Image (cartoon, rainbow, N blue to C red; front, top):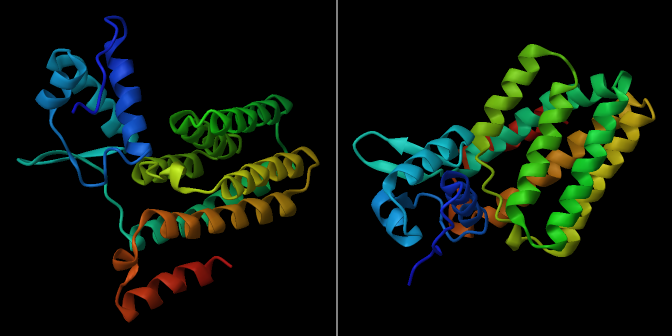
Length: 241
């Protein structure tokens, strides 16, 4: 049985990219699974060229990785890597929220509002790709609004490494709604000119999101790490409290 349906002849690369991304986000393509150009092209009913271009774009976005002499695979993350990424995001985006809360352009705030609305609409339609893209754009916008070039660069590096493998279908409606409401609270704090409240909200949001990610994305065996590694990971969280 084919995982993918055949496509329209116009905009093949974008169609393939969107469908591969959706398959990654909903878990149809699992972390570590190999992407074989020829097989994907066969399922889509296209030549290899647009498939290759789509995979290259997904690689730039961090969804897949190329391994020399082995092929291309859906990006894998470990509990340790997730903890490192999220704990660093707490620091970077907390600083970004402080700056934004002190001085943020009206146009930026309006764009933030638009993106949260898009998140709500996407989840109502169970459109995981659209939700993830809006969430990514929101957090990128927060960092970009600071005008701090090194902060922006570091945040973009983390976004790529993250790969956005949150399989949103594993989250309950209550959990997703809570995450969305935290975005609204952040926008309101920034608009009210409350930098410390903005920092507190985004840091708490990222901590919660990080712990949810670990619970939803990894099974119990993957989370059964050595005492030394668990202690090291806990130290990362304590350091950003």
